[in-house]
Length: 285
Image (cartoon, rainbow, N blue to C red; front, side):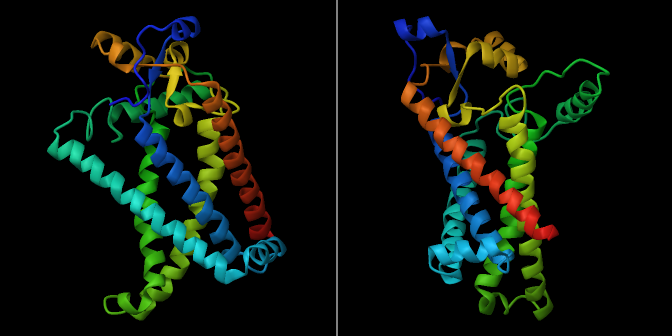
């Protein structure tokens, strides 16, 4: 389970308070591969999508031309596909073969349930000042939406991209009009995914008041007890009632990891927001 080193009541952790593991090392690495390849796909895809724009031509010229842009786009696609397949394999291994509870259903699952519907409704009421803020479990409804959006993107954007890449092969199974359609599907769905990640995901995850200017937990893997109780009160209460607090304890993130995470996260957010501005400028120009 948790990959952060287990805390054995050290002087340092006692001074700084208790920290709890939220994401394992493997999950953090997978997220790093995900956002790195996505940024690569977004940057190269937008350059090809708006190839007539001044900034796109300059960017392409700086890396060796549009041929190089296409090469890096395909490279990022391959790496992302491999990472996605590894994740799917792990999910089914844990859920079907190891029989781990909570993978496909329950409070720790990424599968949406009735509570998520109520949380969404109550969250809207809270935004309007009509009710209290809902309390969230391990994953909030918007995080589950983000998670399944990756599956949608891999199926729709990924398939259409590979269909264009290996058009002679897919021509044996798809009619000519379908091969023409995948170009539009890939372009428009890719643009939609980019706009969603940069305009919605970044805001919900990093720029909202609870986390501004950045939510560090996906980079460090753990969060303080106070932060845990504030953001995930139901998960915290469940963990205590089930007697699992000790198994979730971890050490406070070292200073170098915090600084490194801030630099990497800031660069990612800066690139994302820059691409968002360039996209909107090129699209509406």
